[in-house]
Image (cartoon, rainbow, N blue to C red; front, top):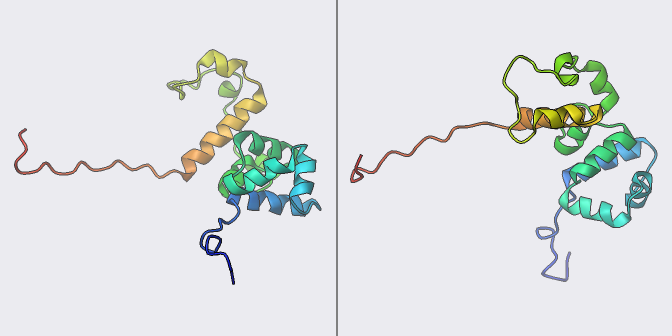
Length: 156
């Protein structure tokens, strides 16, 4: 029972789902609580507190992936396996031509990233971009909205 009408079960936000998943991974490694997670990631407890409310930042997802050896895509979406080692063992082999900076024979897939920028990026950055894009593609529902019919009084 709450005495204060401002703070009720309906008004207090639950913890962001990305942090629920990060705490699951941390607990498997013997870490309990926000301070332990913050210390393990070498960040301030305030950052962890912010993540609890707003979700883990992209930089934080990548840092957690490296430190906790878990999948940043899984932390962000909850889809797939939590262990990046498991994902690496079971994932299809990457396109060697693309990984080496060469083309796939098809059109360049990015509008905002130039080929020379991609080629000069470190392999781990390209892998993270690819994993992020794959998660976004698999978790999106692409729909084409139907055009509403023209009103009878509208001119063609």
